[in-house]
Image 1 (spheres, helix red, strand yellow):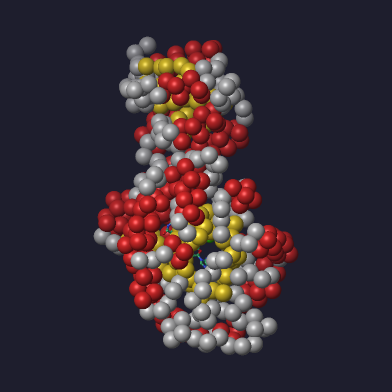
Image 2 (image 1 turned 120 degrees about the horizontal axis):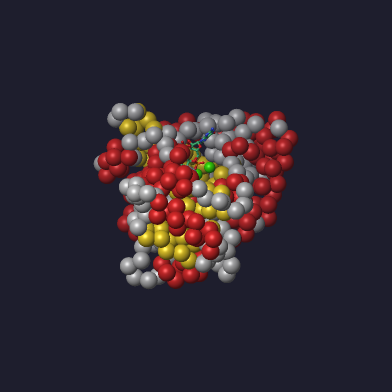
Length: 431
Ligand code: C2E
Ligand code: CA
Ligand code: CA
């Protein structure tokens, strides 16, 4: 049979079964692949990949293998920065293959497909066709969920400084005083209008723009913090860091450099890292987080309670702050299951000496419950929506009038004010 035109030149097949290797090699050849190289397990495959000049267009990786299985092999690929498109294959059922596929994507590996054995020619042909779609993936969810964002317009907007920071107040729950702001990126596309942050952030993660976007937003936000500092308003700046950025080799230096440029101390910055991000104990991400801490940055575990490994992450990573996800905060006063989770997360965080933050505070009832549970910082629409920098000072003035309502009933004394500040003192939220 005449081979069809095929986008794949060479395949590295990692599988300990000789029969499977033979069958898949034949199918690949029928699909037009020129070279198929077989490796018996992950260790042999990594040794082959270390040979100069050997870069297969694609790898088919079995999960169960002796010595080094497929999961460990993918973790090693991640560590070595090898970004060769992968098809995961396994004799196990679909849910297991999907779980490993998800893990590999969370590690930032370009996974094309997860296939159950025995592989068929049709399934392989379909997977081969997807190869070009995933080659540019840098991290985030599967290509099929790519948001509908004009990447060229986004790239242009970033370089024109049109992706800008907005600021949402983080307020001391017992006293009602402003402690810091979370920096949230905003972009208005000329054609589509305002694009929701989670959509263009996901698009930036997929298209490799996230580093440029983040550094641009951080640069603007740190400049703003420096300007507030000179007016006597020292606010803790909370910056969102995409999990995939943590494996960028120069991230720590790049962010530290921006702080130095504007004369802002790392002790004034908290990095928010979503807890659903898988940070492997030996990966580069953990190293980056440790180095940030060593330099004096605060680390917040964001969206706490939404991932599968919240407590494991807490044990592994030197966090200084725990931010309970809004799904456990808003309306907790009327739902017992939410209250139990909220209270136990806060109790645990207090015992770990972490600063406690609750997001999604929308009503006075939410606020009172958090006050009762001893939560330290609150953030949400009850206090303010994210706003441009120029709106913050007018907000502070208006907020002062609400202090008697927000202050805990046990705190009778009204605070002393700095002319610009709603805080009693300039102390930081972190211990
Ligand atoms: P996040 O870090 O969990 O940020 C909080 C989100 O909740 C923000 O949405 C904020 O506007 C919204 N929010 C605040 N208070 C309330 C409330 O009381 N109720 C409700 N329902 N929502 C509230 P936003 O700005 O649309 O951002 C969405 C997500 O996009 C953020 O979630 C964050 O993960 C990501 N993001 C935003 N800016 C950046 C950025 O500069 N870099 C990175 N890496 N991610 C960013
Ligand atoms: Ca956040
Ligand atoms: Ca959050």
